[in-house]
Image (tube, rainbow, N blue to C red; front, side, top):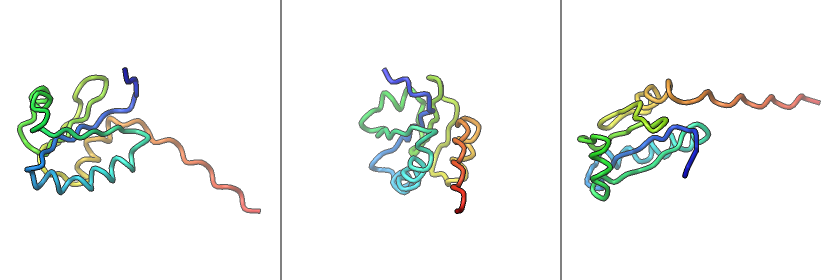
Length: 105
């Protein structure tokens, strides 16, 4: 079992969806940027219709944020980075503090 405490962002997509394909690079960037605070996964609704039904996905693309086995956030349709980050903000843990810069000699 996976006991990773980070929230999981599920990206429901389809090869047939132009808007979903256009969001791929945005989601890849977000996954790299927030890798210490967020897990991400991609679900093709054509390959996993039962999972799409479980999360009541009617629009592709859809992002669902899962935290503690509950869906706590959702964005349907093509979304901008600020809109996604706004949805994530209240659910992500605080970023780790930056290490202090080394003192100049």
